[in-house]
Length: 193
Image (tube, rainbow, N blue to C red; front, side, top):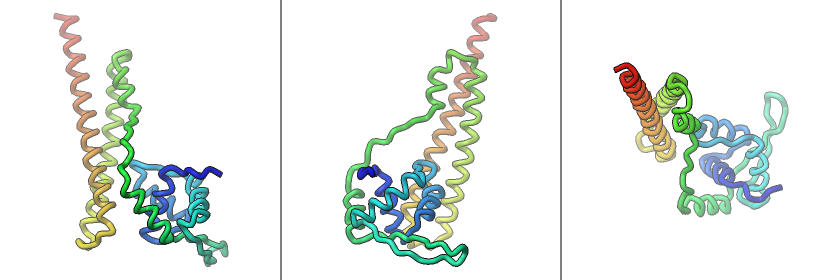
């Protein structure tokens, strides 16, 4: 089993620092709160939980569920896990890596019909508008919660970053559409003076 779990280890420790978690609740938290900028699969989560327990960063407790009689394993961060999380939080973050296939297609777009790129940009705008609306919804929920709850500040700031990013990407795509349209118009005028 691999011992280097990358950032997965710290995501799990961070979620456990908020409250004890099951593997399922971790997956759901990641899907709900982080899916716009981070993904983890069950195939990453469960082996990493085992490693965290083996390394003394987390401990487990089993409870029997009433629904189907299956046992649920709950993971709780230990003092050693808290110290490891604090150590990681104090490190300088890795440089962000931007990977947008739309940017590749736009970059090579002069080799195809402008309408094709225009359609891609329309879909990109729609996705960003949907994500922006979701971030606005999160921000509304956070605003309605107690003002002095510091445990939600990090989530609120993450949603705020999403709001600015999705706004910027939508604005870029709209500007790209305008420039493509202007270029096409200019080419038409040159062909038909």
